[in-house]
Length: 517
Image (cartoon, rainbow, N blue to C red; front, side):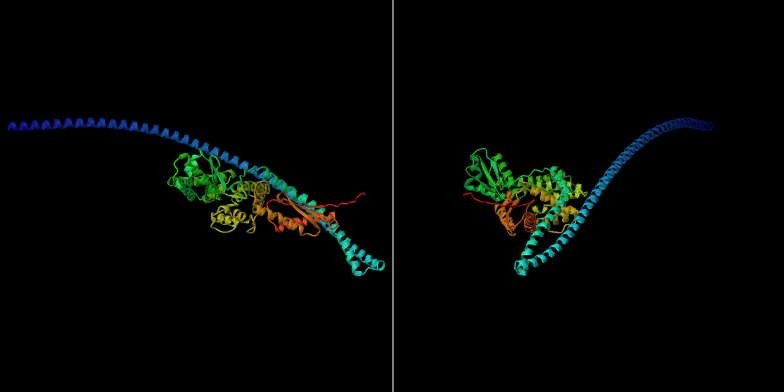
């Protein structure tokens, strides 16, 4: 029993000793963990504080940077606003000057109208006096000359009519000269400035292209065995190859400049490659077609860039590029359109109109010339439909459709484009026409002049740009000659279509001949 009790006591003592040791070790570990936790928290707080300061500095720097950008943007906008204000002030001053000029012109017109009314009254008085003199002269002639009243009346009326016509011609010539001087000043200024500042090159298209050969042997390879190569080439390209005695060269003939360009480029590549057979011909032609389609887009974009126009539908860009391979009376359509665009823009600026719309209308005015040939109609109306289809401004569409007066002009820009088109086409050497049309135009000119009474001979000279009329001196006096030139020019305007202008010169010559025997 004693042993058992001692064992129990020892076990209890060991248990309490182990428990005490365990408790002491646990408290020690807890103290160590608390210290480490405290250290970690202090370290975290210090790092957080450092990160916070760093972020605050970054935010502050970013805020300063943004504020500087906003200040710079504000200053730039303020400068632009100031520039716009200066431009507006300049435009207002220009408008004021133009308004003053218009007022002066209006005063001048009123003065001319007053003068015209006074001269009209003077003419009426002279007519009344003439009637009185006719009456007196009739009575005297009847009593003295024994001439019947009707015969005398006819004679007097003829004399007085010629006299009145002579005086009226003098008055009309003076008034017309004054009006011409006043009216032409501003128009000449606008047109001359526009032409001087525009210098677009024009190329005269032909119906053939010449391809150089490295040697005469190449002609045989182009023709191929039994002509299979040349037949295949002509079938694929739609152009004819002319192989003649011209040394080291062949000629490609075709009326379509686009197809002719494809044929020329394809033949040059075949000659360079050396392998000429039907399969290779088809392959090269298709490749050249694809490349030219891409080039057409680039040509259209270059034209838009040259004129300074943007926001154009891709289909219109392609049509512009195709204009390079079209010609009208030998004048390249694309270069002609670029020149019309510049002329229209310059004249619109001088007249205070929207130059961008004017240039746009001028550049697109001949779009109808490159519309699919299967679509029928005047090119102006075809271009009008294309412009409307692809969302062009109504002002631009109307100017395109009205530049040959197929539809009514709705804005001044349409008239500007029509004038610019005439200026570009009427320059010496800009266009050519067929021999048949040229001869018919000359004959029409001479027949119009010959239709007037008193005209003896008529000559159309300077390629139809001038018509000289020789009148019979006993039927037409000097004063009536001026009126006759005006009437002939008016009839030409009404009955003929022609580029530029036609000068009408009336010549009256009196010759007195005697012989010494």
